[in-house]
Image (cartoon, rainbow, N blue to C red; front, side, top):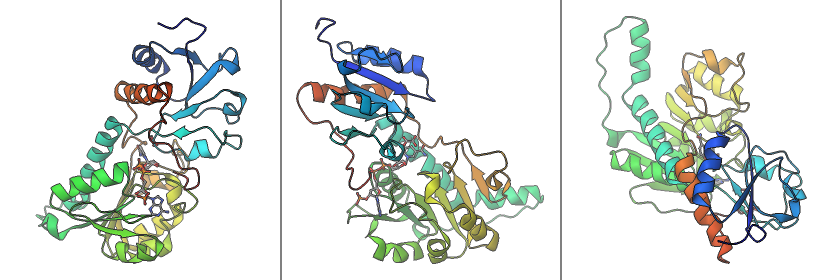
Length: 316
Ligand code: NDP
Ligand code: OXD
């Protein structure tokens, strides 16, 4: 094993997660690496790699020998907002099997919930109404996914396997077997017009912020459903509530919010047609993600470029 002097140093600077579990897993996956925990970082010039989530902005700019920044999460908009984010250092986002499994399960669960009209049955239960509704066949149910990347692409494929009529929208043209694909702003209205259950799985960028608003919601067929598992800033909250109150939307499941935790006074908590989940659609799990991080860091140590580097120009 390399001596203490020559061991590469990884700085751990993650907040809001189980740090003890992470440190144990990282020590196990990366025995050749010295692990330091912010703010107890020692000589900052020793640090070559950083693993971050909700870290203090400006911190990374103080690490002169930084070679790569690894994000604990898949969405990196908060890191990109750091005004002092080192420009030349690759920023790597989390692409991990457990995240994909979690998102796939959550989206499938929500789509099936609305497809089988469980929201209507819940309301009927409150009214003590026995009503045996006949759901459409899945091939007659049009589901649309905004974002066809690691997570959206997987969810689209799963919904196809369950027999749904699936479409997806991305920035550049994509081909996924069995999925009707649309790309670019000019094709967004056409995509929305055919979408009865809309799922948002876009990254948050200047082009996607506030994308769910009065104008876009108006393109959906009346009585559509909306599932947001991306970021709260994709949605104009007041427009979403107006669409639910007018019947343009039948119901929505929201896993992400502009402010998290969702403030106690926020109207989403008590809206009859909104289901709130506390940002749990897909959770970065220590067991698999530590291994993913280790594999990527080892690529760097072997002189290769890390996988899943964020394109700073695109913003994701
Ligand atoms: P990817 O980067 O793999 O995919 C992003 C997709 O969005 C791509 O298909 C991309 O298009 C498309 N896209 C980006 N910008 C635009 C645009 N302006 N117009 C149209 N399409 C666009 O991301 P992931 O699938 O890994 O993750 C998506 C998001 O999910 C994350 O950014 C994060 O915010 C959220 N997330 C939420 C979690 C939760 O628990 N709720 C957990 C994990 C992630 P193209 O294919 O052309 O590049
Ligand atoms: C993520 C998230 O981006 O947890 O990974 O939302």
